Image 1: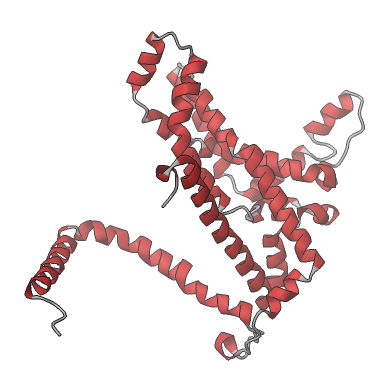
Image 2 (image 1 turned 90 degrees about the horizontal axis):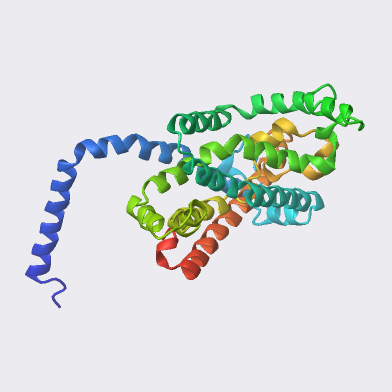
Length: 317
């Protein structure tokens, strides 16, 4: 039986020649792309080989491949450990609080900044709002530890008002709120860039038409700017949902202490202690793999929901 006709073979040869010509034509751009591809291969895909640790009783002297397989033993151990369930709950709650309060912050900031007419003042506010993003959590944690200390300005104001000073960072009832506030303060300016870029792409004629129809600034923002931002907001929301269990290792690690462990210990800090301090590599890897699986499920689910509710153009794929 003849599998391929002459036309099929000729067409295949034509496509290969076209592909080779395209590669040669865009060789400069492809070379620029090469460092990025190598980065992902070396630092993202090759380390995935270590996922095998989650299914083995890892022994340093034997290496990963020679260590014995144990199936889902470490996953069962994690799910039967009440403390793991506690850190899972902490990660979820802290992340949800950050999303609920922190996600709208850059959108509101971008909308407000868009209404500023004085361009010099607008650029000044933008620049100042970006600065906290470039500070490491070590620096930010040091700043807030001093601000919230007994001798800090917050307690000084509380004392002037006649109330008793308190150590906020050792109080479990306030610690999660501090995490949310510091996270918003650090990231809202930088997060607004993508929304400001999307706003600048909205056609000016739409605003002019609305102005001629008598729409005030609030109505123009509500009926033109926000609907135009909707696809961008959905995409950012999908991407942020994939990291719902990333409650912020750097932030929590630099701010938490033994007094607030019950409400602050998250999966990342738990994995750090189990993996690097207790040297229980297999168990720590199993917990990390579980977190990645949850993130994958969430991003697929959120994307499907976005496509279903807003149409195909709202999802990532």
